[in-house]
Length: 138
Image 1 (cartoon, rainbow, N blue to C red):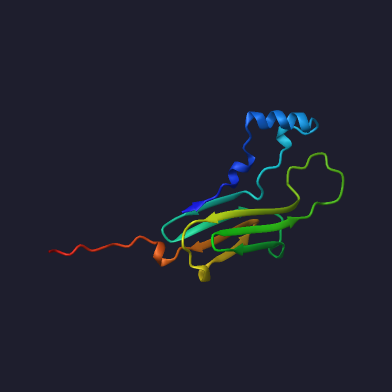
Image 2 (image 1 turned 90 degrees about the vertical axis):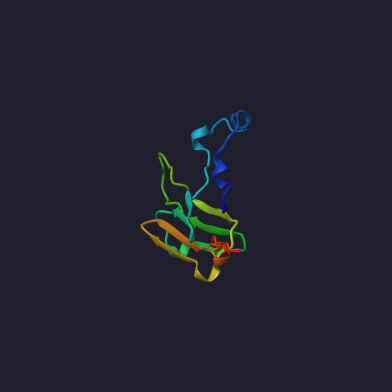
């Protein structure tokens, strides 16, 4: 089972909107930071798969760490110099933590990156997979 609470990062309550309007009148709600990079997490019988969109970054700029219960994706996107009229691609340091609540096979974890899409395949351990139990006739 995988639980990732980070999608709730961008959620706002009406009270949050009031405080934001009061404390930062120059920043509109559309300019608020959202969880970056966006991730998709899927699970099947054998693997947990984390897909992460990080366009324009090199593999050497991304740090993946697997702990006992989480996958940490860290990096830093440098901003281009110059004057911007609009900037929607975030720059600066980022970190996403994907909580993993299932036994995994740490030795078989793999990651690959192609066209700005990072894919991490986390195999489940044999102990976490369902086991068919035969019934003996008494």
